[in-house]
Image 1 (tube, rainbow, N blue to C red):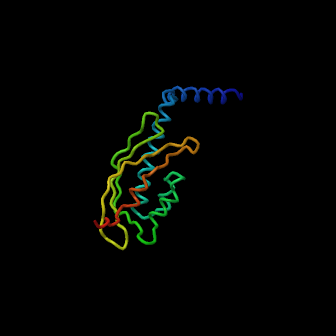
Image 2 (spheres, helix red, strand yellow):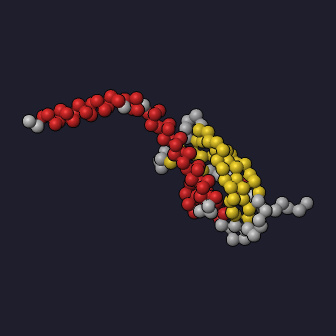
Amino acid sequence: MRPKPIIAGLLALLLSGCSVIGYMSPKFWYAPNKRDSLNLLTESFAANLRWGRYDVAAAHIAPGQRIEFLKLVHDPRAPVRFTDYEVLSVELGPGMSEARALVHFKLHRLPSMTETAFADEQVWRYHPSRMRWFLEPELATYRDAGKPLAKR
């Protein structure tokens, strides 16, 4: 009497397996997941900067640059305030381990209320050991953003 439920279970498993055979391709799982995770991370980074959650945004920065980034945005002499941050495009590289994102952002440094607009091409790298993307920002872009130009 027991073999009937087992046979029914195996039959159901076999039939459901046939319907998902196209999803077994590594390209189906690997590419969309990396692309989707990258899109989510770039948007999360942008939203956290806009809302001033720099410590949360810093989690998306490559570990070797994270402290320097936090020093820049939390500079007690002239803290940075992002007023807008928009991700315009994200392009994956051929090996899917590097991506470039084009972003526009606006910021000002307190106590000044003069807003400065920038375009930046960000480099994001996938770290297989951590199974996630990290931004490797050009910190000079952020360091000099919104600072008054030297008198000539």
